[in-house]
Length: 219
Image 1 (cartoon, one colour):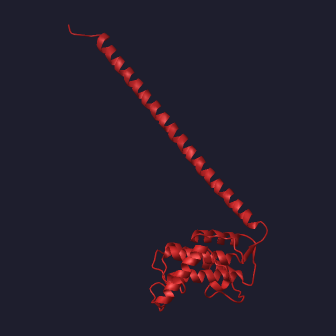
Image 2: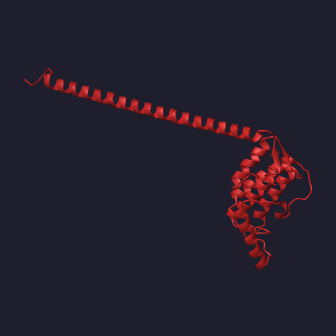
Image 3: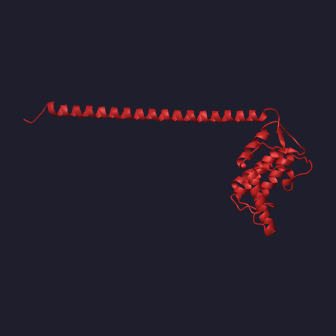
C-alpha cells in the first residue's frame, strides 16, 4: 500500500487525527477505523505502561532489534502490514467515538510523559524520541487505510488557516489599540506636565512682581 503520509511526531499525529475526525471518512481496505484507532492507542499506552518491566530478550535479539529500528527509521515508513507486530488480520467493529477519545487521551499522555519508557517488543529499549518516531511511522501507515471523501481535507485545512488568520488579526488589532492607548496616555501626561510648568512659571513671575512693585514699606 502506498502511503503519502509522513507524520514526523506526535503533534503531527494529533493534527491528522483531528482532520480525520472532522471530515467525512471511510476505510480503504479490510480494517475498520475503530481498529486503527484502537491499535495506535494500545501501542502508545504500551510504551508508557510497560516501563520498568524486565525484558526476556536475549543479546542477539536485541542486536537484531536495533538493526531493524535503524532500518525502519532510515526508510521512514512501513511497506507491508506484516512488518508490524500484532497487526490486525480481520475486521472488528466497536464504538468509534470511544476509540477516538482513547486515542486522543493516549496522545496527550505521551506528550506529558517524560519517562521512563518500556521496551519495544521488536526494537528493544527506546527513549522518548525513538518511541515517538516509531509511533509516528505506525500512525502514518495506519492512517493511510482511511480515505477522506472528496476535498474534505483541503476544505478542513483552508478553514483552519482562515481561523488562524482571524485570530492573528484580532491579536494585531489588540496590539495596535494598546499602542494607541499608551501613546495617547503619554501625550496627555506630557500636556499635563507642560501645563504645570506654565502654571509654576506664571506663579513665580507674579511673586517677583509683588516683591518688586508691591505697596507698603517701613516708615
